[in-house]
Length: 463
Image (cartoon, one colour):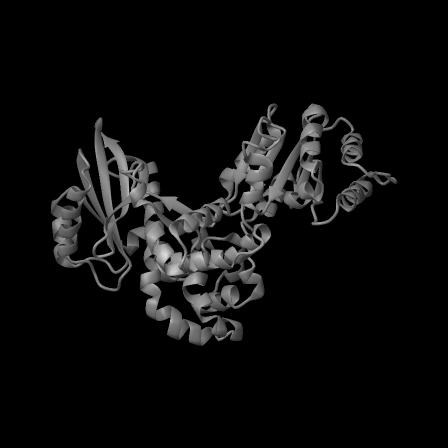
């Protein structure tokens, strides 16, 4: 299964474990959770139940029907405890695996279903060698029902697997015939969501626009679906995401943009973070500096929707892909792709550090910025890596340029000058990423100074 080696290994180890009886596999729709679990349990004796939003008695009857089909005998089951006893009889002292997809629907069918399964696992199923895999499309439900401190499962030893978007180096395999620049764009549109990658495999960016954003199936994998599962009313959440997509990242900026006080904005952001749609960060060198907190949308497919499609919902509903691309997307594509490119460069740094191909081993990669409140501007680095070289602190300062012009030597000087504002001690290295390459003067300087590294499109093509 493409790009899921680590998750497959972890799930296979769970099935062999003598200590863990339950695995929680969660992540938003479209990440390939079912395909992952299906591949791992295919060679096992297993039952697969799918929860459905209904009453408790109907939920149990539907699950009993699945079990009855495997046992080939009539079952009179009305309570969850009777279902679990019947599963024990079906397993017949063999190792078996029970999969419950859409576990949130099962757990919420009756107030005590979540606790009933937990008790059955601890007292009966686990000791009998039966493994249970619970699959959820909602990070919020996973936290509330299974992972959180108030969950009845809090003291049960679990295998927790969050299935997230694929990295660029994995996602580009869906587009083997496309140029590296087209792969950049397609990654910026799909966000590495496997369902969207499969849907657009082999397409060019314009075709992908229509397949994802002008198609009801494609839209079902975006943030709106995740919010619809867990929020009764999400008009202002949409408004907040639109503000983030426009580049308003600080609480005071978002407050001004949406017309809500700061003490209202923060709870909205907390909910979006619990849903896995938004992340919060501080500069990597100032983690306790709450004054420099900023928010951003996690997945690029969501950013693309809120940046380009939602503001022209009229054209989106009309399905006018050509006009949307030519008039709305393409004129602002380089600006939008800046964050996408930075994430790809982040991945490149991680890979090179892990392979020992950087001047120092990086322990952490984040970013750094400073705010000018008077001018209402922000300046900083796209990436900052913290590490150690020969027993001393080392820092890698990075800028990522997605423009169409080769980088001049003046930008190298600007980068070096800005490092003085960070207050970092120890050895410094400077890395410039550029889609358009570098002018001869920049190449000459970099070749003469060992702590300057230039990374162009040829190097990124090797990821």
